[in-house]
Length: 501
Image 1 (cartoon, one colour):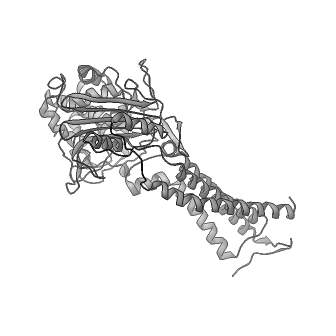
Image 2 (image 1 turned 120 degrees about the horizontal axis):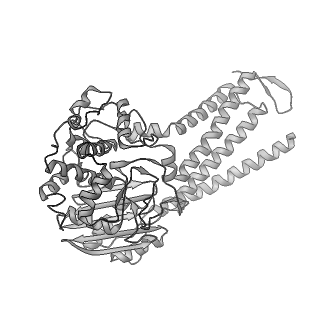
Image 3 (image 1 turned 90 degrees about the vertical axis):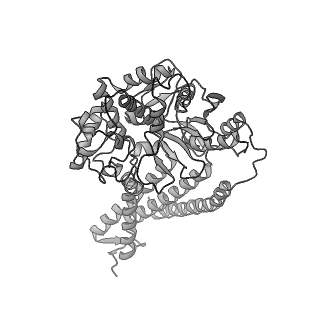
């Protein structure tokens, strides 16, 4: 391309960048304004009105049940979900696994304060303290296992069976002596799954089916060991969704091992039966678990009592971190779906499933509890497209700037040495930060993830990050190549030595 052509491309690029910058500056105040509370008109006063308003905003499907005193007050669905549609419920699975373990304790097959190794001889970690981990500490997540100290990424590892999953722990260490602190770690419930299999001689999915689900009449519930699998039961199953610029789009859940920590599929109808049982109603009480074991399962047991909420056995108990009444509850969030069960005061229970990344099922449950008490709430809805638009604009601006910088360096138009090195270092740092995002997230927030999971949960931010990172790498590489060549080209075409301060 001739110099005139290159200059015209550069001019067009600068104009495009300026236009995007103007749009971004206009979009940011709009995004902030859209996040502020506004007059919602007449607020919904019934569950049905609330759900209709939520799905009308672009949420693909919501299904809920409100129960009190052993009776179903409301069971309603809107959008693409129906009460009989099977949905994945992620970490709601933990309460089912805990129930199976408490059953064995009731029947004298084990005690909650027995060391895990007493019933699972092959249980080994790269830490001598692991021999003192008890079954109770596994269930209340005070075992010392944390996402940050696992010797593998639980979302990238692909064990074929629960036992293979637990064998991965041979690479892991404990963050603290068992029972002295607390961290939420799915792997605890992998251990619980294998423990049930070892004690009963039956895989957990089969044991749950026979000893828990069938007695409760939960005929449309099944446990799968891997996410990304769909039950083959003949019952309709939900499609999960992410959001692109505020619009819900179907998404495919990445395959990863979940097992007793998050592999359950169920229906809203079955969740209602489960909630009734957890409240102490129905024929399952005494047959599946006694009332005493239900109280033990709901009792806050983990350390760190300075916080308003703590972990029980497969449940949380207390006042949620974001406020609200004291309750026993658990949420389940996966790639493109969300679920929640809350056992509220006055013998009220609320179950919610959403087949999208937002809004969160627990937030919907809080609103429904307020509506039940005669306090209307503005409905939650699909996310605004403004945030994704701002992220995309920033990414395009960064990418455009990088392409211009790469072109100039390849033509030999390198800035002063200190400035060029600083830009190259900044670009290389940006690239590394993006590449290391899953690992850095584990260090900063204490939870693991990987790129397939992040891309499903937040596709535009992930695409924007890589749209920025890859051109940044190009800037750094092109600068190093030009610096290694030791010369540059001035604007009049004559070669001159690289300028040095």
